[in-house]
Length: 69
Image 1 (tube, rainbow, N blue to C red):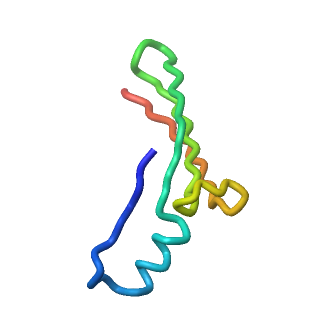
Image 2: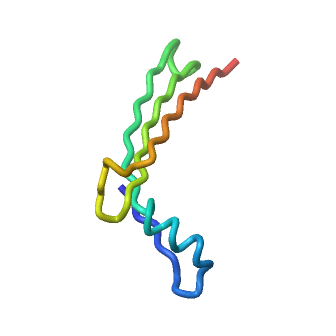
């Protein structure tokens, strides 16, 4: 969980964005195949207002495959 804040002299558009979605919560998982030579990684992040209103959240899902030769 993290919170993004801005100084009072920051661009007002950024301040509005942070008030709307300045709180983040996330979870991730890694799966390893063939030792550490191949990894599949999943991550989910919810950006919410500072009140943790998950009904107003923006959701981000990321999938990544890492292969070492």
